[in-house]
Length: 110
Length: 168
Image 1 (tube, rainbow over the protein chains, first blue to last red):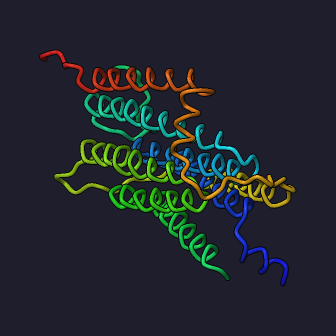
Image 2: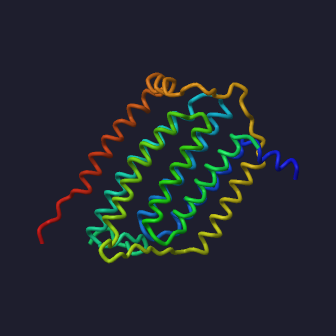
Image 3: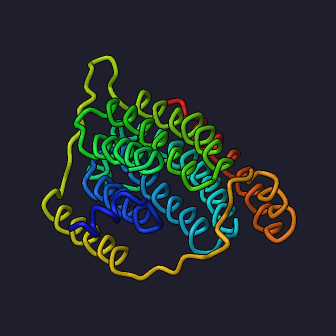
């Protein structure tokens, strides 16, 4: 118990990894349960952020180089591109079907 | 308990609590605004990991770009006039089982693994010049491809969202 309190008081690699693991699980939960497509997108953003925390934590603690941070920049770039495209698709779906609930969208065309 | 630990737990709690609001809130606008605090908390964690450039990038791209885009999406696809912002969930029980198994596995693996920590850890100095140098040397090809991907995404998003509907 004393050891655990001592561990809690000195944040290191494991702390960041556990935070990112919980964040990842919350994002997966949003992707699995939300009916609104935009909330599914928010879940994807949470998952990407969790992955980024992992990359940067390993870059800081495990390698001591900046490669992880460079990869994290690429993840952010892809997240921006993904959000733009996905929202354009969602807006188009809303115009055609008048709903963005993923369980009601069972047709590719109207 | 030193200052680093206090700040770490502060940002962790902000991140995880607001992420929980994003995931569990019934109101989609509340979710969108809670996402703002999640991104802020993650940026704070980046600062604690000596990633100053990444933290500023996180604020500019996620908070300034992606979040505004998502809120636009909420406003354009929800029935704002009828104040019908509620949104449902589905498959809750299987999702709870799967996600709790996933979280347990992840945290268990993170906890039990004996991670090797490098001796030459990244220092306190500014990272932006080094990252820029790496973009133009060892990561040149991914950097160029990323710029092309952004251009394609820009044109594609504009094309998809602005498609003219046939006059009916």
